[in-house]
Image 1 (cartoon, rainbow, N blue to C red):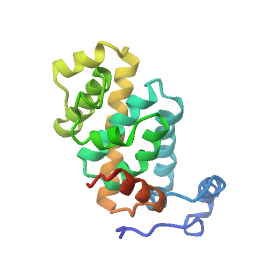
Image 2 (cartoon, one colour):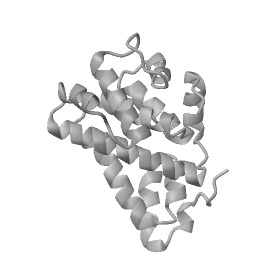
Image 3 (cartoon, one colour):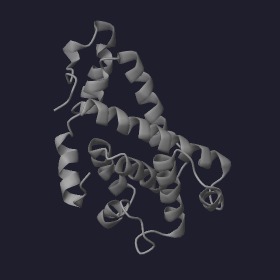
Image 4 (spheres, rainbow, N blue to C red):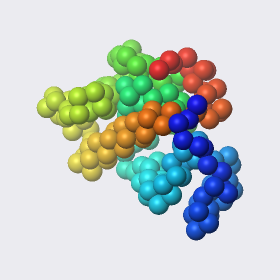
Length: 185
């Protein structure tokens, strides 16, 4: 159960209700936004930054999702991981690959994917990447893409930690996705 109330539109200060109204027009409001809406100005900025990566980023979407899933897995963040199962599937990742981010292997991933998984894994677990890992991604990503990979990994580490600290409840569709792929965090 979430440690903070999962706000409804009526719980927001009037000048910020438009944000939830806009989200409601697209479907149910995710629990992450309900929890973070206790700080509505920060939530707006948080959403804008995250939406950049998902909608406008230069990094190949499949590589982005591998980095996000790896960060969510290593942070032991079931909400974050479960939300990105569907994103990963939409980019063409198989359920076997989604499960495989737990223990990446060349049987499931090509060399570029393995390099991104190593990069996101080291950055998440060690707060740095080795020269060898950096060189592996630099062999196929340009500088802009390397910086974006680093920012995506860092951003989703932050998201995972927020979700874990607040113990935000997984939304039902994502809970089903998590059960389907069979990953436990």
